[in-house]
Amino acid sequence: MELFTYFRSSAAYRVRIALNLKEIPHKLTTVNLLKAEHKSDAYLKLNPQGLVPSLKLDDGRVINQSTAMLEYLEATSDSYPLLPSNPYDAATVREWCNIIGNDIHPVDNLRILKYLTGTLGVSEDEKMTWYHHWIHEGFKALESQVKATPYCFGNQITLADLYLVPQVYNALRFDLDMANYPKIRSIYDACNKLEAFINAAPENQPQE
Ligand SMILES: N[C@@H](CCC(=O)N[C@@H](CS)C(=O)NCC(=O)O)C(=O)O
Image 1: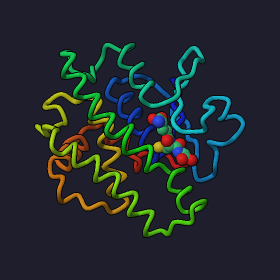
Image 2: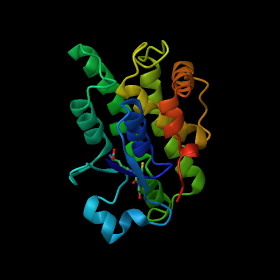
Image 3: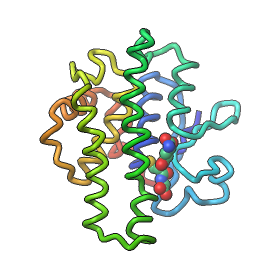
């Protein structure tokens, strides 16, 4: 498989962790967002939305949208299940993934922030207020539900951890005060002791 990725893309980061945990052989190809490589004709043929990541399967077929990739990997790989077997528990894990993937990440994404400051003329301070606000909204709900024993859903790593770690990484990069989220912080620290998470981290990716 070939994952088109960018070191700071949290959607790509989720998939990098899954590929590592499941030990699926893959190649990483950098799409540099700062150089607008995601808007190139070649990349748009792969991903018409011009967003990272994109996953090319061994037979050449392509999957876009990180959630679709994670579901595909979960359905096609027997190794390292990332959802609890009980359907209600699996729904709970998906619920937590969606708080991040559907309700935090889309409104705090690079193109939204650029639209705020560029098209709408919002100041840098106002942009950061927006950014922090939407993370706090989601993290408050997550903090009240996740188990943190030591991972989101107990002692099984689940998809929820794959969504949470990149989002926390991002929050810390933008100086979000994590004082009210001790469980989220401890899950982040527990996951980051594992090789699959360490190898997927932005600082361990090529930037070009
Ligand atoms: N829902 C998409 C989101 C993809 C996405 O927003 N990717 C970001 C990086 S994390 C991106 O490519 N941003 C480029 C831009 O905003 O111009 C997914 O989960 O794959």
